[in-house]
Length: 299
Image (cartoon, rainbow, N blue to C red; front, side):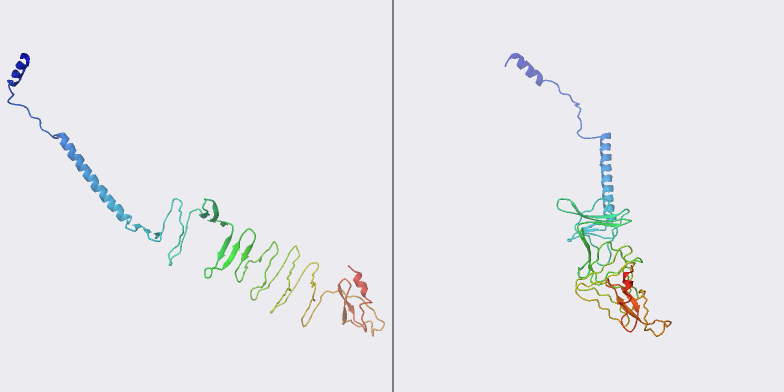
């Protein structure tokens, strides 16, 4: 060790020590401590208020293990009780009401139900509006609730009514623009059945025959020009106690064998022209149709 090192070592050990050395305490004191306690107290109050608000919300919203409010989560799905309002689209597989209450869908504008395929394309739509109910689909069906029988169906090709009886209560009846195929047409009891074509012809055809029956009333066929009764392979049979043909033209016939020219003619003979026209000829001892056949030349 050198001399200089020895002198420094002996001088460092002989330094006097201060008797009143100042000590600094460790911790937070003064205004910092008071601020810390204030923030801790404020945090505690905030937690208590939040806990109280959470309990109040759970109580008001009726939160339970099964759901909240009118909403219940069951094994079969979601159950809503009372009136529910949806502000955004609702996507579900099935909607049904309880057995003792109806299902009501209400909207301020309209109610629209859409059906889509797996690609998201619209395949069917039902819109219930204030003015009309519109259905857009390939086939529309109305079925009976008991046996599922089709009561009404409509598609692009045809409309089928499967009810046992179709009742039309309008004052103007039913208007058909084209042909109508049906096995039976009848009116209500004590009501008249009227088939009318105002500007065209009325044709009734059947492969085995057309039967017109009026069990408790009269049968009347009226036309402006011609009435055709045609049977291609059979006969036209009129079965009645009295058959009357009104407004038939009457031919004039004078016979020298008449007992009196001033006697009033009361008996006539029904004659037929080659074209099928019917006319009356005064009856005589023999047939007078040949003598009065000039009426067949009239238009």
